[in-house]
Image 1 (tube, rainbow, N blue to C red):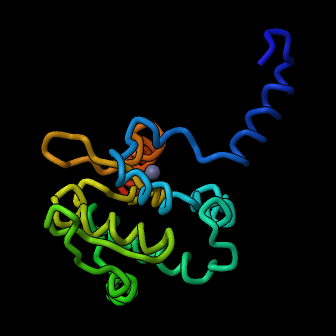
Image 2: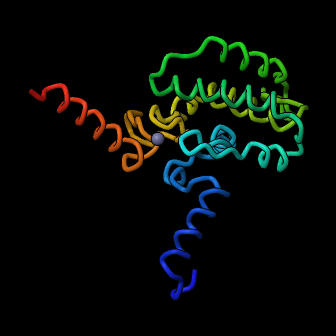
Length: 187
Ligand SMILES: [Zn+2]
C-alpha cells in the first residue's frame, strides 16, 4: 500500500482484503503439512464473521457442484476438532466421517509398506490425511476454537491451547466472563 493512502482508503482496503482471503490469524497456528490441508478445508468458512470460501475451495480442487458432500464432511470434521478441544462430540459427525472413511483403503506401496490410499477426489484425500494423523498421533493437536470455531494447531508442549488466538478470542471470552461476574456480584 502507498504511504499516501488516506485513512478511509486504508479502511476500505482492509475490509476488501478480509472479505476475500482467509484471515491471517491462523498463520502462527498453521498445522504442519499435510494436516494443514485439513485445517484449510475446515477453515473454508469463517463462522464468526460469516464469510464462506467453500465454492473457491471446491473450484480449486476440481469439485464444483459437490457443495453438499463437502459441507457435510467439513462440519463433521469441525465437530471432531472441537472435540479435541473438550467440546462434546456430535454422534452424527462420527457417522458422516465413517461414511467418508469407507472410501479410503489400506494398500501396500511398491516397497511393501502399508499406506492409506484413496483413488477418489480431493475430499477423499482429506480423509486419508485425517486418518493418517489419527494413526500417527498428530490429530489431537488439530483443534477448533471454542469461541469462534476456527481451526488451529496446538503447538503448546502440554497440548493445552484453547483459543485460536488469545488476542482475538481468549481475551474477549475472559472479558465477557469478568463482566458477567461483576454483574452477578453487583448489589
Ligand atoms: Zn477463536
